[in-house]
Image (cartoon, rainbow, N blue to C red; front, side, top):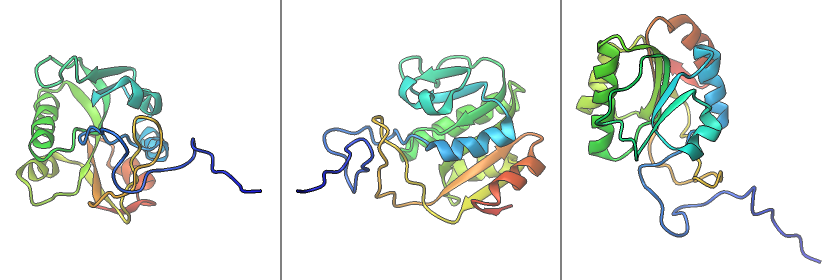
Length: 179
């Protein structure tokens, strides 16, 4: 008799079978728990999908079809953003976020990106941040089907905005270094 694996609990190693949107990396629930400990609620998640929102549970989302690059974002007391990860589009998404943050339309926020600190977009984010966490591990993101996707070749950073420095440090220091 052979044991069979539960296909619903398996993750992917390397490339996901079939086509995969390389810009979509779903944030695992454990990290969202940390975000919620700081923000309490998530009013807005731009650059997301209905599938990702089953984990994030934001009050309002902006999907690719709605196009967060062109639409006016609603005022949001709290924002969680895990933008598309393509090199150019990530910078554009971060600039769009900073546009609304600088305009006073975002109160508090946590942004999850690659820790590409040498890039212009990361420098712009960090220059406005109230704190940043560099996890001591690479995040195993999820695919749209809820399975973990290994093969993440980069580290990440959680960047905090607004008056949440103390709460952010308290809850994110368990993930890695907080500055």
